[in-house]
Length: 256
Image 1 (cartoon, rainbow, N blue to C red):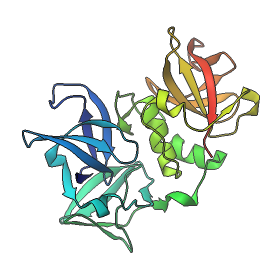
Image 2 (image 1 turned 30 degrees about the vertical axis):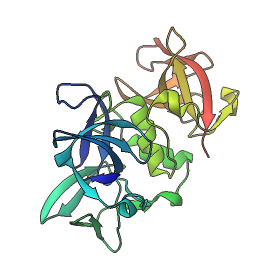
Image 3 (image 1 turned 90 degrees about the horizontal axis):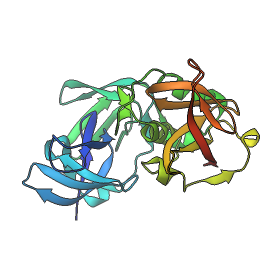
Image 4 (image 1 turned 135 degrees about the vertical axis):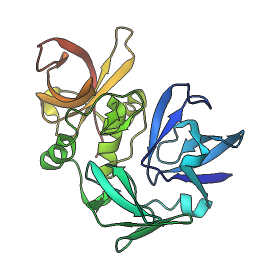
């Protein structure tokens, strides 16, 4: 079995080996994957190691690495919306949530690539969901546009937003909302929530189709059209601008 690491700011993961097909996910700089299949040497079918999500990625966006290197999980993660990393004497713009593999004293290595980074970062185990931390991390993403499969401030979907924010707090979640719903413990009442609990919502067929981060029992930050803060009650989300009910609440979960 071969392994690889993402060596670009954000790499599109598609449902088939073609640029014309749907983007279902993104991998960020430093995130590791298992190569399941090589197709025409231009595309890899991969399974990301942090959430087991599968799809197709262009081979030029990754570097093949040893298994031991791939499974050495780095605790260092970037926290600013945009971060400047130097590699091969060139600057690369990296988004929030990217990983810094084999990193120490401002320098790191990914496979044969050496890089330098002097910006803000933190150890994933140093912070946990708290009102100040959540507001600090999520507040930077306000007005980021919705993008199906996206995981960056330039475009992010609801579960991608939640996943990256929680990654920066040392909590690994699955990729899609319906999978995230099966993690954590159930909270029975909205009045019992803590900042950082996740709220899940269903469509008319009772399928889990949306997720957001509760700031308190009255407010939720989520990606719906754009990343925004709306009001919530036992029935669901109400758009803070229009007053229109947009999402039906089904369950609340806690992850720490």
